[in-house]
Length: 304
Image 1 (cartoon, rainbow, N blue to C red):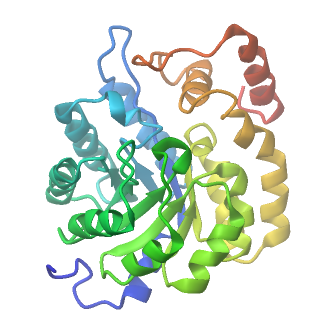
Image 2: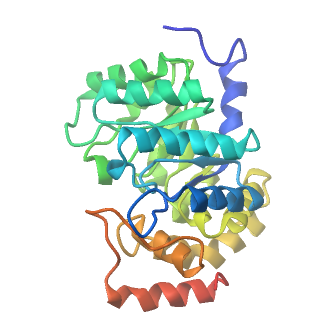
């Protein structure tokens, strides 16, 4: 195993660095289908102004499956260039091929990312030993790893016992939980010392009530101040204030998943005038029947 990125700090102290709100940022495209780096930079500034603790480029919300290697790496580099250390960057560098994940993660590490987000290898559905070897190989590169448990997308969950085993690695510091289960968060925190970040905005506060430390958020793309304030209230123990914000924005948290992510959030950002509403196939615009519902939600929470 290579030297830990933490350079002698205790893991317990280091993992506290990853509490807060992290925006799973969209990748905007121009009308001709190219990555819109100008709009992307503006989105990052909007997030920083909104008080988030970090940016997560090229994750599910960033349409990573449709970006080629060169675009993937350039989006991460652009994020780091704009951020300039003002917030953390957790680069989405996961893959269902370990060699691919290693290549992307090595690039992110060399570029200066703070951590990598590592999705469960999708489609090939490795067993527990394969999962352990895959994530450990990536963590051995020396960049902190945030595991990403999303069985709805990957077709396979990371078993709690595998999370517990992986948490012993000095560079595996957190897990993004997008399995929709607060009970699973309790199981994880019972068995190991790792930061749990919700992967569902609607479950961020419930997960924090049992020990989660924040959220990797879709909703913060459009409402960064609201989400980051809610999470900070919860981290500070101001549960009444956090609950009030959760209930105010709950319709947004759930409404942004009325269609496959990131379709609704890109539609919302386009309605706010922040990006062009362009997707790459197989992603496409939402059905016309859903558009009035999204419009109503955005008006109700004051986004338009």
